[in-house]
Structure formats: C-alpha cells, structure tokens
Length: 322
Image (cartoon, one colour):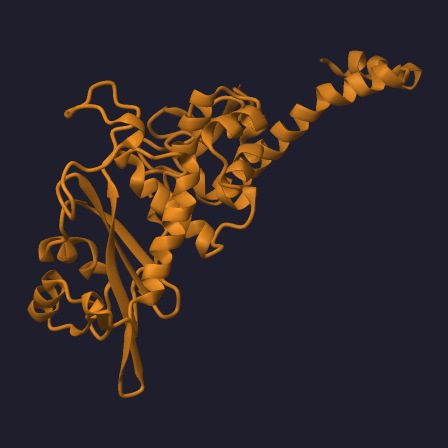
C-alpha cells in the first residue's frame, strides 16, 4: 500500500465500531508474529552474514521475497536470504515459528502441537526435526573429573517407514528374544559430576570397545576417572587408552562404594536414563532413525540449556557449513 492510500485508511480507523476493530486486530496479530520472527532472523544472521556458495562477505541488498530481505553476492552473483543453508530454509508459515518453538519446549506430541499452532500434523512433524537439527550437536567438548558411563536399550522401531525389513509388530510389540539382542538400539550415556552429558546411539545389540572409542573417547579427558558397570567393553577400552577405571558390580546388587574419598557409582547416569525414557513415553514411540534428535532435545530440556522460544529459534537457524 502506497503512503497516500495508507494515510487515508489510517485516518478512518476511529470510525470503526467494536467488532470491526476486533477484526482488524485479529488480522494484524499474525503479521506481528511474522515481524518478530523476521527481526530475530536478521539479528541472528547479520554479524556473520556471507554468501553460502563462496563464503564472500561482499553482498548487496537485492529486493524482498517470502517476507525476507534477499542479498546478492558481489563475487559469484548468487542470491540468497538469511535462511539459505540453514535447516529452516524453504519452510513456510514463519509467523508460527515462535509458537512452535514453545511447543517444543513443552514437549507436546505431534498432533497436539499441530492443533495448538494451527498447522497439519505432517508439517508439525517435519518442523520438529528441522528445529532440532543443531540441538542434537549441542554437547560439552570434554567430560572431566569423575565420569559415569552406562548404556540403556530401546526396542528398535521403524515407525513411519514405508517398507519394513521385518514382520510388523502390533503397537510396538516386544523383542522376539529375551535379553540384549540385535533387536535393541543401544544408547550410551556418559555424565561427569558437573552435569556435562554426552550420549550416542551406538548401534544395535551389546556395546563394544570399538563403539566406545568412536563415541566416547573424543569427549573424554585423558585425566578423567571413568566409572561404569562390569561390562567387559569398558575394561578393554580403559586398558587400551590408559584411562583410570573403576567398576560397580550392579549384578551383585552393589549400587555404590567408596574409593578413599571418592563415591563410586553410576546413579547419576542411570537416573538420566530413567528421565529420558519417562519423557519419551509421552510420544507413543519414536523411530530409531530419529533417536539422536530426541536425545539432544532431552539434553536441552534436562540441563535447561534452552529456556525460551527465541533461543531455540536462534540455534535452529545456524548455517549448516559452520
């Protein structure tokens, strides 16, 4: 709307009756949410804005599209906006993103999230994993001091798959064989006494020393004190890499012991396992391929590392190649 026409329209606002004013406010409310999201995106991306193709910081404004300022790179000629190269690129309904971020903080299931925000359940599901793309990588760089490590298991799930590589199980079902088998996803969790947490879906079946080398060793301080159960994989891993290691014989009913002034137990990590499984139960089962996203989501909530919708949205729009 051009300025003269807007001036005439604005001058007539006092003539509106109460129902008309409410109608105008209802129409402006989504636009207000859109403006807030667009401003947050621009603020988050402006300090390090560069061309996603060549990395050049020399770019000019190049019009608007889909409510966002577009830019053109002076070196390679590519046009882009502040969402190009981020997990939220090409998603629509930007005015609802902050409301959906709050839904994630409230851990609502897909259908409830879609109904509350006003999008289809398929959109709510797709948004969930786009928004969580970087959350799953938000982990401490190093675990220090006394580090507790233990694994837990969830029944493998192919929920949402169009083709199964096994017979379907009714309502999740149960494993065909008792105990640890290739039908279970192994989740390794390691926590230090400061609350730092590293987790990984190591694969199917029992944990191995090679998996510990891949998923735990890069985050483990060489001077740390590793505490685990009596699983042989931990012993082989600690012996190979010269890590101080102590075990707790959980099978014999020993929950904790003392080594001088040190408390030897894995109760912190086992409590984390329980909180994760209790929280996961509200989603009525999740697919194995998305477990890493849910582990990151739970860590963000458990450690209160994400406290506001704005903070969650800021994390979600990082550039993928950073």
